[in-house]
Image 1: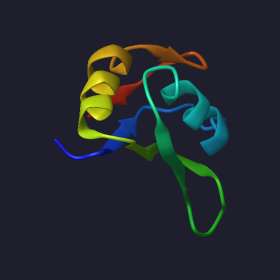
Image 2: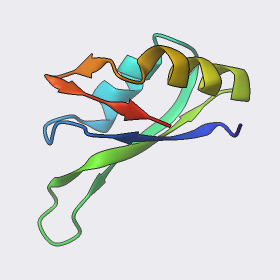
Image 3: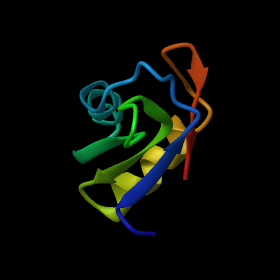
Length: 77
């Protein structure tokens, strides 16, 4: 497994910083990037997160997939 994860079903209000803080609960989160619409600047409801190691990425999938973040059940893969 690589270190980069896909995170789906995010609230449109979730910021990259909030997402990074959330993933830091399970390991070293190197980066978190919420993807935005290029025309409107509004979140598209998904993001990419890079963890410090493949072990931390696996732990993030196991522990955070299906958890709630800002009222939405997120998908981590």
